[in-house]
Image 1 (cartoon, rainbow, N blue to C red):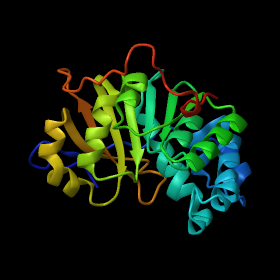
Image 2: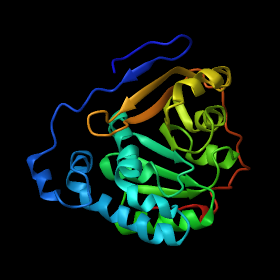
Image 3: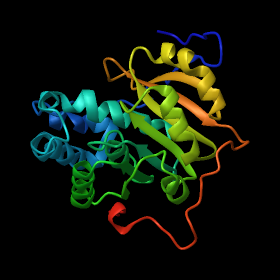
Length: 262
């Protein structure tokens, strides 16, 4: 389906297919449970993606981080659906994954793009512990922080990011309120959404604008190898910053138990 423009503050744009086809060596994975598209997305780091999938299907399910029904559809529904947004990020970007949960989309993005600096933000302890174990096991360049995006100390300590990514976290009004304070001026929010993305943008456009979001668009990624492709709401934080994170008293930093580094 071609690009179409809609009224209001957003339009739909389809990110074009990757110019190159999947390398011939992807055939080596035929007969495996790994789809051929995964080789194109993850390249030489495919083994890391495979190990992450195994962790999700094993410890992730056992510890209640991932629902048992999801274990059989990890690649296209979760890993590839998440990793495709990496094509929207610039080299060296500092990226925060809001409400990371089982590490989606942050961990697939960190695997697909070793040049990015990824922060996995998650409030629940059992998920944080799982994330720290996975990040350490895979040797990813990612930090795990226990906290909520709306907390002032989080905005102070990990704000100023180039991009804020999320997946199945909250409605766009709340998500925009949480994302904008964590971004630098002109930083971008990339929220993975479903079929109602355009309707949701229209419904929450006033709150999004009041929160500082501009240039709001709905785009799709991975259309040449995902069915359905990943739908993303993309918004930029206006250059005139509307959020100034409240500062904690001098000398107070992120509590040690809330920090985690690969």
